Length: 118
Image (cartoon, rainbow, N blue to C red):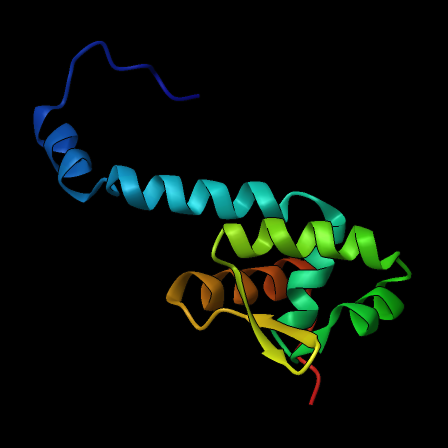
């Protein structure tokens, strides 16, 4: 068993403080993780990491209604995890091309022990 230390290691604390993420970085990651804490949004995000899809196709793939998918897409988009483009009357969604999104995608697949489709 480890004995608790009753002293403050100033050098260690200094190193921690120097490498601590910025408030902006912590907020960004926290918001992304909050949004991906919902199973439906996580599933939609994972799909959009691999392909660009419209609401109707996402709804069919996830067995959800289009309004429910639209709600989840709005939250993911607000969090910066996905982006949209219009093609005629249709909106198409895909994962944003950011470092955070790439890392979250990788972590999801590692935790779930799955690999990307071809």
